[in-house]
Amino acid sequence: MRSFFSRLRHNPTALYFSGGALFLVVSIILIVAHVQTIMEASTISVPLVSKIPLLERRLGSLTEQIELTQLHAAVRTGSQQETVEVYALPQDTDIARVIATFEVIRDTLQRQGMLSRMSDIDIGDPQPDETGATVRTLSVDFSVSDEGLKTVMLLVRLAGLLTVGDALTPDEIALLVDRTEKENPSGIIALEQFLSADLLRYSENPKAYEEQVKRSFGNTTFVNAFDNVLRTSLLRDVREILQSDMGEILQNYRLWPMQMMTVQGVSIIPGSARGWQKLSLKARVYSVKD
Amino acid sequence: MQNTQNTHQDSLENIMKRTAFPFFFFALVLMGLLALSWYLLVPRLTHIEVGGSVRDIAELKTYTSDLNAQILTLQDERKSFLLPVNNALYERLKTLKESRSSFQILRSNLNRIMKTMFPDQDTVFAIADFTFDADSSSARIRGEIRNVGPRSMTVLAQFVEAIHTLPFVTDVKTDGYTRQENDAYGFYSPFTLHIDLQ
Image 1 (cartoon, rainbow over the protein chains, first blue to last red):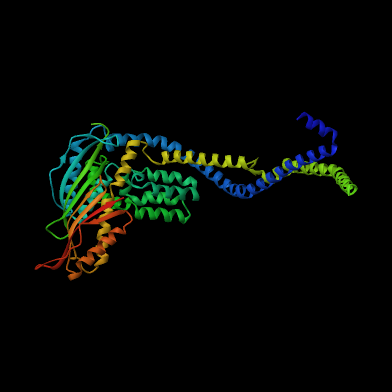
Image 2 (image 1 turned 90 degrees about the vertical axis):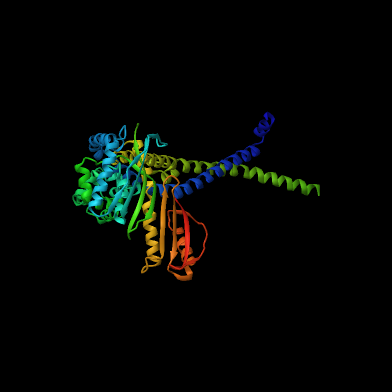
């Protein structure tokens, strides 16, 4: 190695060629780096640069929305949490309250000519459930008209739901939030108040709650999406059922909100009269600990 | 001959000697210019001012992923404010409740199919019983196809096919297609359908 450098020192031509070749290699590396950087700039930077202002705007609007909702939510969450613990998911199942709810359903539907008979209610022993709750199985049979069947099934579906937000699917909520963000970020307050409205109170005067939200949005895109959600979601059925005597009676007897229930099984056999069915319903009633 | 070869070697050596320095100088200048371009020109072309500060490509990528992460965090935070109740068990049960509500949707879709197939005749489908098991997310329908003459099996096949096309139905099984006859309503096809739901 040493002899190579000493020979190189005594031979300037070789020295120039070696140095020139080294510089040329470095130049080629630099040319490749230039090309790569310029290609990256056009394929990566340009799309990123057009995307970043949108992301920054979105971040700004989200921060603004969170600041606006924070205070209101802090007050509200405590009271809703309490309602869940007392009514929807109590420590123990209040069997008298569950039976009273079904008796109210029976009496109201009977008065409306939608139910001819309800069997005894069979409530099982508490069992642990894979959800982490304690569950009791409830079995009851009805002789009901088509409308009566729809009402019974809907009430089981509504059991445990407290607010308008609970009656909407995550996709429906996401759609409304997305439209709010695009059209009027500060409208989130009105939307938040709508979603946290008590389901029974909402069904008593839905127009008042809906207009309050619509007033916050001048643009029709949100209003169209909002109207569509109101028309196609569970809220439509909620308005129909709870606006009737059923809602008023449940409220008068302090049976609303109901305890959380889900359907376990349903059997329908045609009844003796046309348009009437024998409905056997098995439901699960949930509590935190029994 | 020997002389010619020596002269040829001398001239090659001469060319090498004469071109060595220009080659070295050219490579040095080229590298110098490219280095200058790399440190002075390329940053001017590729560094972009976004959000009040100048960033290169790598920094832009990091900044974008930071923004995305912040947006996701804020979205979660907003969701927790928007949903009135922050109770994990309650949320789980609400989701479970939603997934167990497919019975009513199936029933209304079956009624729609029956009405679409025979809009003016409501005695074709005689449903004997309809059961729904939420745990296995499945339903069973027993009944008969009546009052359509000898094509009752075809109507049954069309009914099964129509149920198959429902978006939330994953499978429909029948116990078979048969045609029977009695004095009360002529030809009929009894059926038992096992429907698996999503």
